[in-house]
Image (cartoon, rainbow, N blue to C red; front, side):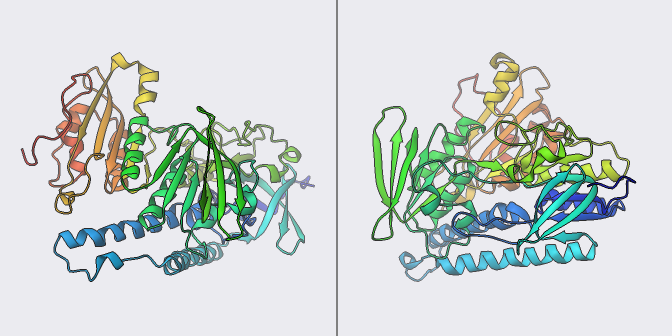
Length: 494
């Protein structure tokens, strides 16, 4: 039971050692608080587990970007031949899957180690245990060996994040993998079925296909739901042109293991009611994620603000229990992005222990989908802007463009496209920027600061571009969708 005299073991206990929880804990220490962090990884249904640092470091952004880079390098080797590089028998260029996964896992382990050392140096108590509430101020940590440790804290932050959702079909948990498993998979994935067309599904299908493993994607409703749908269409058509197969309006029905060790997957087209099936080496499930709130015993803490999908509803990260907060992917209606969790965690710690008042601003957060041709965006999609302001009050500037580096290897430029969604009334404040093309993440990051500062189309077109870059294409936008003019580029340098 929490102490009656108001003395607690810790000023702050953080449940979850991912990006948001760790950022909050470190900032709280900077503000003079005494802090404990509890972190425990329950193995995936396939038995995969990992170290301290959360999803991003271990089974998210970091290994994903490394695999994406591996895929880009493979493509670059083939393109190098067109540029005059003499690559001995380019048709023999193949990926060594175990060398790739070993390199990726070695990097991750080094980050796990640095994270642990960092906590030790900052004197943050790290408890490798699964935390749950006993009462509003008391946490019970269940350790690896099954023993329990009890601790009390004046403030508690829930930063447990989420894990991949498994559809309720025969064979899902027995035979399928998820993003929890793909980055450390011991055998090459071979011919792969990816179930789901959100950003995780498309990124995985994209790099697997580029690494030489045939990929098929089941799309339940639309690809990249929640993102701008015109841009989503560009990404999927680029992936199709690269050889990824898509089955639209299809949901999985069952996965069974054959004597050969391969998997027979069956699916249903929800429109035509036709059934489809094929045999794969790997089935990767990317059908969304769920928040890890069930195991927290929130009832004992009096926290009763959960959404239908188990996420915490907390407008300013504060739950209905004043000293219990939440940050990161566990929050309802917030972007599930590492930098969002980090920034929100830091600001929260400053409010708790440093007398600050700044709240997290969740608007105009930029993000990038690392598909073979990347998609970067900041602000509103065209659909969201239309819904909010009405099509008549918007001006959408758009253009196709030709990256200079695509010319010599004669790479497909059909899907290199960008647009700015702006208010129609002068000076035409920009509501959203969208870019499909090489290094989209690097491009959109700079523009994100401008959008945060309220950039207008007048200011954008008066910005002088750096030539020849792909990012300069934003400064050359001059054709609106309303005009009906051809958005294809006329020439390079005029």
